[in-house]
Amino acid sequence: MSRLWKHIVLALLACVVLTSCGSSSAKVEWGEVLYAPHSAKGFEIVATEGASTLLRILSPWPGAEGVVKEVFVARGDEVPPSGFGGIVLKADPKRVVCMSSSHLASMDALGTIGRVVGVSGGEYISNPTICEGLVRKDVREVGYDANVNYELLAALRPDVVLIYGTTGENGTLSMKLDELKISYIYISDHTETTPLGKSEWVVALGEIFDLREEAEEIFGEIAERYESLRLAALSYKGRPKVMLNSPYKDTWFVPADDSYIVRLIEDAGGEYVCKGSSKNRLSRPISGESAFLYLAEADYWLHPNAARDMATLVAENPKFANAKVVTSQRVYNCTARSTEAGGSDFWESGALWADRVLQDMIAILHPEEATGHRLYYYEQVK
Image 1 (cartoon, one colour):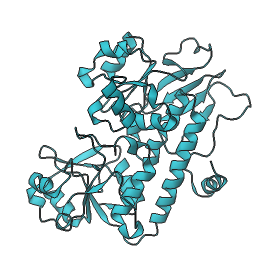
Image 2 (cartoon, one colour):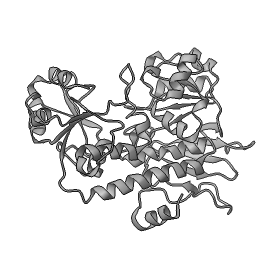
Image 3 (tube, rainbow, N blue to C red):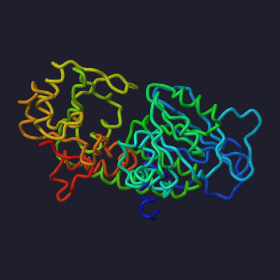
């Protein structure tokens, strides 16, 4: 990490990683926090009496207030203390199954992507190494939700399965993995409400693979670039208003004010038109009438479901065909890097590379400030 970056952090930031907390040779005591994230809220790394560490997952799924999942990352012949009720994982696992594509980006950045032996929803994955592995059958599709192939999963002999919960605990999967005596970890980047919070989960994965120092450097560089872009956006003229999403089964859901995507819009120098939702909610439904009023007020329309061309968008939403964002073609979707099945790399590698996503957002909302930038995750709906 550069000397300049350290000075920038000390002077300006309280939301990015400073230096490795675990690099000191001084004796540490059981329970001492070795790494306390500055952007992520969902994990911390705690010392044990030896070389092993305790990875504490503080928000294993959305709304999991007071629920903590602990993973004893064992090194050498060390074992957890008597009575430990969490997961025990030998550090630096060689065979990994990923149930979310967003975990792949961090593994790729850490140089451990070749250890993935199984994935869920392979047709939606963008990572070229995994796609090639699926074709060669070096990587296997294990299924998802109620369709997980546990016989295949067990046959893959994974050292760890990286799981997640959406509306609650992934109880069926975790109980079955317990029965099979397979270690698993909740990697809960999706519970974070800020772009850098999502990115910082690379450090949690770095701890598992004995690459925490490298992971901190990766995150530090992302945060440095992100903060540089965010600070520059503070001086841009005007704050374009942004409408999000599109009707799904006749209901239009919009994210809460404190969501990841709203924070991204604000950091890019924009304004969310649907403000007013209660805190700690993932989304809320709005009526078609309200949506029409919001859309009439908006300067840009982002994430209109899976629409990649204006004909599809208007066919799906004929009542909004004359909205100014449509007639002026100020509609953009995060579909520039999509799989044939409709998976988007925005939700995969974009979970790690927050700086790339922010740069795209700035180029959309303030094109005069991003001359020459070619959109990476986004494309204009024409």
